[in-house]
Amino acid sequence: MDLARLAALVAVLGGAVVYGTDVFCAVVQRPALARVDDRALVEVMGKVHLYGDRRMPVPGVLSIVAAALSVALAGWSGHSIAAGAAATAVGLLLLWLALYLRVSAPINRALTTAAEAGDVPANARVLQGDWDRVITTRAVLQGLAIAALCVAFVT
Image (tube, rainbow, N blue to C red):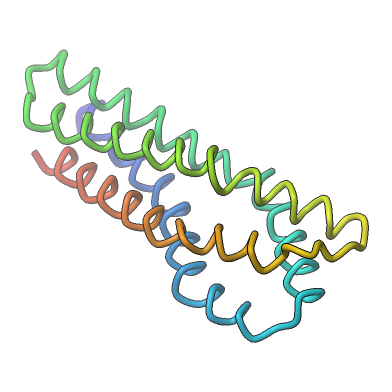
């Protein structure tokens, strides 16, 4: 296996962790949270984000770095289709990151802070609703990035 394909494989594995998490949140967590009271929502999501925001950057950054490495290595070795597919994945992953940083991360911090303080903000449902509005888009971006990385791997 050449290094460009190995990098694409590593990117897929890192991205799969994030993708699976986002799909779970969109498909299971979102409807489940709609059925709990505000205190439970803040407590659970605050704790989820407390751990998630500490641990999820590892596979996410690994995926972006490995995808970028795959672009460089595939391009250097003359595999233009693989380089293009990996570059597409990098673009999609960077869009995901921008969406996360602009929308999700501030909400994560607000819910974590509230949970740690034992507070229930008056806008807890609004915060969660804003978070929920982008989770499907985040999952789609991750899924498309993984598909592009699979193309890079097989070409």
